[in-house]
Image (cartoon, rainbow, N blue to C red; front, top):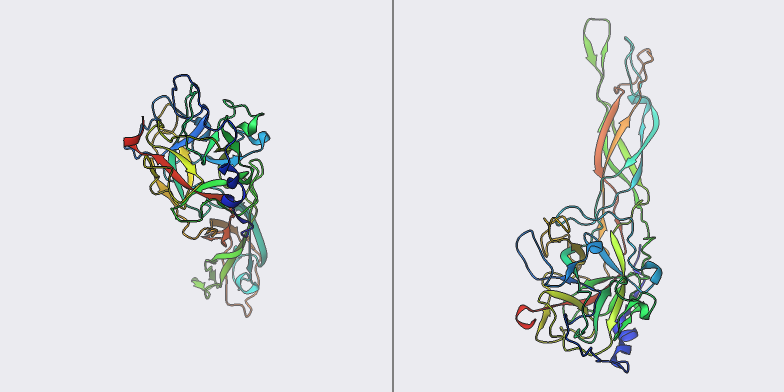
Length: 411
């Protein structure tokens, strides 16, 4: 799969945010319970030790996003839909997928004919094949894992800064109004089907790669090229030549095994699709809980002095995790990473799979007079393990700063 799209959101969609709507900055006059709108889903990136991670006071762990990635969407039919990808089940594990495979090998005539003597289980000459499933493997991309939290349903204030991006739970917001976004927020159709990836300051902020975006119900499949994963030597068979002694002829030739991987049968990423919204109204950026992080679309720095970059995240996609035994696995490391981060934006890392083939080479038991053949391989089952050909998965992602509220500047 190749890079298909590389376009700047800063110049295409976010330029429209420079002119706030008429009600920009309008806030509720009642006492706020949180400085974010109800139903906002955000990552909690505060470094924490211990197994029982907890969201900020008043916030809840967002269970549908645990052990999955969040895919941005503006399509109401995809709001809160999860795909058939397998949620991660181990700490600092990349999302896994596997492939059906077809393996083939050829045994030459010299390896299958017996000499004189009693009947023996010689390998059968000719072409053979079998099928199976590869070992699970990752996508080649790097990931970082964070607790995923939802704002209180009683929130009635909004101090999220202008230009922030956030996901919304459309069971709390209205999915049929304003693209599932609350007041003073707008849907961002250019991010439909994309995953948001944190990048470092001065990187290409607001760029999309590998478009068009994916549909949550039909992630593209991929295949790997045919590869020779290795070979197995046929066991040498001893022959009784009628002299009371078992003789061994010369070693049979190694038998190469070729494997073709079919298309993956499950999604390469476990994901849930959520409404993606950009803040179009004003906000001070104050009053949000420490450690809550939002993607930021406007500049090469975070909104203000009370915000800072989430450390370790650039170049990695984000997996949501749970914080304790009652709401999740509870043994996952906050901010733990796996795989290599992307250092060249737009690059698509390659990945392979381990494949084990059990080759049944037959049981040719017919007896022949000894001829000129000198290689005699024993029938039965042989096994070979090797590595498939490499392939790339062009995951559609968009690059933004991931900014967290600093501990000394929150309420």
